[in-house]
Image 1 (cartoon, rainbow over the protein chains, first blue to last red):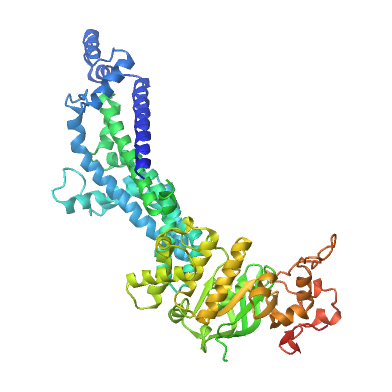
Image 2 (cartoon, helix red, strand yellow):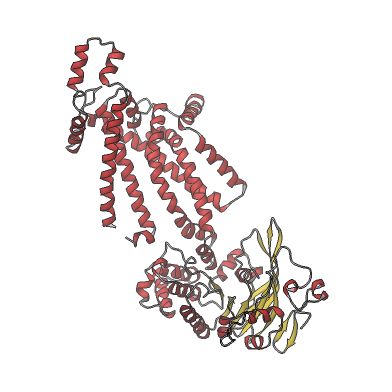
Amino acid sequence: MIQYTLRRLGLMAITLFGVSVAIFVLLRIVPGNIADILFDSAGMIDPAEKQQIVKDLGLDLPLITQYTHWIGGLLHGDLGYSYVSEKPVLDEILPRIPITARLAGLALMFAICTGVPFGVISAVRQNSWLDYALRVVSLAALSMPSFWLGLLVLMAFVDWLGLLPIYDKAPATWGAAILMYCVPAASVGLRSSALIMRLTRSSMLEVLRQDYVRTARSKGLSEAAVTFTHALRNAMLPVITVIGIETAFLFGGLIVTETVFNIPGIARFLVVAISWRDYPMVQNLVMFIAIVVVSVNLIVDLAYMLVDPRIRLRT
Amino acid sequence: MAPVLEVSGLSTVFHTRAGLVRAVQDVSFSVEAGETLAIVGESGCGKTMTALSLMRLIPSPPGEIVAGSVKVAGTDLLQLDEPAMRKMRGSQIAMIFQEPMTALNPLLTVGRQIAEMVSLHENVSRRAADARAVEMLRHVRIPAPERRAMEYPHQMSGGMRQRAMIAMALVCRPKVLIADEPTTALDVTIQAQVLDLIGDLRRELGTAVVLITHDLGVVAETADRMIVMYAGRKVEEGTTKELFAHPNHPYLQGLLASVPKFGAGEGTRLREIPGMVPALNNLPQGCAFAPRCSAAVAKCQEAIPPLETKRPGHAAACWMS
C-alpha cells in the first residue's frame, strides 16, 4: 500500500507538470494580455507606457523563461504578484480558499447524503412509484444547468420567499455560514447527487442479484442487514470512484454558482482573473485547483483500497 | 423414526409476462435425521426452485408458493411470518449453493461471515462467535483455521470456499441442510473431498441432507434415497439402490442410459433423451415427458399419471410401467 501510494504520488507530479504546461500555454494563446486590456478599457494611449508595462511584467521575455520563472517561484513558495491588485498572489488566494472549501464540502456532502440513500431506496423498491419518481427527478437534476438552477433558487428563496440571506459580508457564526451556503451548495451538488443516486441504484440492483446476497438471506439476516452490511458495501465501490471524478466537475459548477450567488470564493475570482489576463493569478489558481482534484482522487483510490480487500491485498 | 423434514404438496409458481410458470408442482418427500435424499433431474426441472421454496427464498414477486407444507421438526415453515422464518433460516434449515466463487461476500473475511451466523442465532459475544467460526473451519478440515478465518474469499481456492460455505451452513447445527449442486463447480478430486465432508458431518451431527444434483454418480455414492423430478413434478421416488437397479420411469431409464460406462465397448454411442425439457409456462396436457418418450401412447398425452407404488419402496408416475 505504501509502495502504491508512492507510485501514485509520482504520477501526481507528472500530472501537475502537464497541467502547468497546459494552463501556461493556453493563457498565452488567448489573444490580448493585461497591457492590451488596460489600454482598451482604461483608455491609456501612450504606446511607450504600454511598452513599459509589458517590460515591467516580463511579458516580452521568451515563453520558456517566463515558464521557468513561474515554476521556479512556485517551487520556492513565491507565487508572484497579481497584475491587477499588485498584491502577492498568495495573499489574494488564501482568504478565499475557506469560502470555496466550505461551499464545495457542503456540496459534496449534500450530493453523497442525498444521492446514496435515495439510490438505495430506489433500488430496494425497484419499479415502485417511489422509484419512478426518484428516477424522473434525478434525470431532471442531471439535465439542469447549474447556473439556471442557481438563478431559479435565488428567485424563489431570496426574492419571493425571503427565506435566505444573500451573500453580502462574511457570515459571523457557523450557523449563519451554513444557512448562507446551504442553498448554493445544494444547487451545485444537485447534479452530483443525481449522478450518485442513479449510479447507486444501478450498482445496488446489480449487487442485490448476486449469490452472496442470497447467501446472506439464507443465514436468516433481516432485509435491512442484507441491504446495508452485505449489499451496500459492495455497491459503493463504483460510487466511490465517481465521487472522486465528481469533485473535479464540482469546480466547474462552483465557478457558475459563486458568480450567480455573489460568493467571493476562488472559483469566481478565477473568472475575474482570466478576464484581466492576470497570468500569475490564473496560473496559480488553476494549479491549486489541480492539486486539490488530484489529491482528492488519490484519497478516493486509497479509500477504495481500504474498502475492497481484493485490491488491497493484491499490491 | 419421525422425519425431520416433511414436504407435502409443495407448489411454486412464477407470475411472468409470458404467463404462469409452474416451477414446482405438488412435490412431496420426507427426510429423516442423518439421512441423505437426492433430488435429481435436468437443468430447469425445478430442483433449485424446490430448494429455494423450502428456505422460502423464492423472489416474490414474481414467485409465489401457492400450496403445500414444509415441516421442519413439526413446524410448518410456510405458516410462519417473516421474522419467525428468519429465525429458522440458518438455525434449523440451512443451505449451501452451487457457486462457492460468488456465494461468499467478497468484502468480509470468511471468519466474519461464519461468525455472523452464530451472532444472529445464538446469544453469544462477538469474540465467542469468532472463536466458533475458527472451530467450525477446523471442523471442515481447513488447515490453519485461525489464519484462514482472517482471509477474504478471493484468497481461497474453490474447494476451500465451498468448505467455508459448509462451515457457515452447519455452524448453528441446523436439522436440515440443503445442498444445491455443491460440487458442480469443483474439480473432480475436490468434489469427492467435499462430498465426504458433507457425509461425515451428516453422520456426526445427525443432519438431514437434501442433495440437489444432476450428477447421477454423486447420487450413487452419497444418497440413501432419491427423487427424480421432471418439469416441476416428482416422477419417481425410492431408495437409491432400488432406483438404479430398476429404473421404472422412462425418464430415469434415459438418464441412466446417458451416463458413460467403462467397458461399454468402443464406438458405442451414448444414448441420449431426444428433445428438450418443455417450457414450464406451456406444459402439455398429459404427462410432461410424453413428447420425448419412446413408450408414450395416446393416454399419456391425455392425463397426468399419478405416482403409484410399483415395487416395495419404489414409486413412479408413468402409465406404461
